[in-house]
Length: 319
Image 1: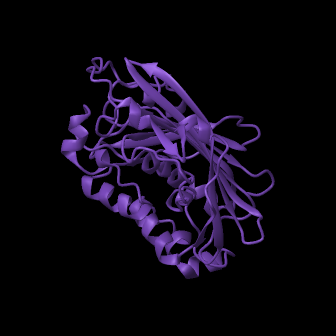
Image 2: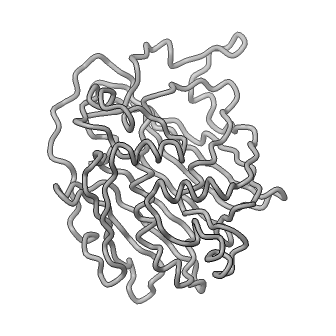
């Protein structure tokens, strides 16, 4: 069962159907009308302090992210950004597109990296395109699935990073959600490290979630306010999906230290983890004879609930 089919959603105040359209001039616009439209580019100068702050927020102690001497000794010009750091570089809004401020959840995320890892001091121009809008009815509620493609370009328009995100928003229908069943569990294949890397365990306190919100810019109230989380059916605040994805990034750090270079990193979010819930990352090579792609999963170390599945692909010949 995917995260977005779980009966408890992070949704904001009830929006009437009239709020799902907007007027631009004399024309009444639907979200679907904005498919293919892009935001104006936004300039970022990748900041050394922000990289280090983000690394601390995800509980990483990898020296390339916080120790300038260690990064330069490894051959990098400056501090290296963790693989999920681009989520901090928020694009400008798509002109005239009005979306609810709250109620979004992350369904899937993928990053593709071009060339060497992103480093402090780089200038990037970031813009996003609304690729697709789909509506479905789940549990009596209209549910929107929006796919965004974001480009992170160097000043000469050379691609540095590309990302694709699926985000979900559910319109409140006034109907009570169905009772929750058991959290989804994997078959167990991804729980065995398979000789790839040792499992990684961690848990995140409410204070950790506040630090991550400050570092990443994700201030969704279900991560920060217990009452807001309880109002939509969770017993406590929920760990950011991208923070659990960052755990997988930490899990592969020993390979990065050996010279492996990430080509792409994708995740599908399955079931939310709660604050103070111990989490465990483990995985295995998809093709052990080739060793070019790791498949990983994050589970609750207590209940075994599957939080996310991820794939990390490495550039051939760059290890």
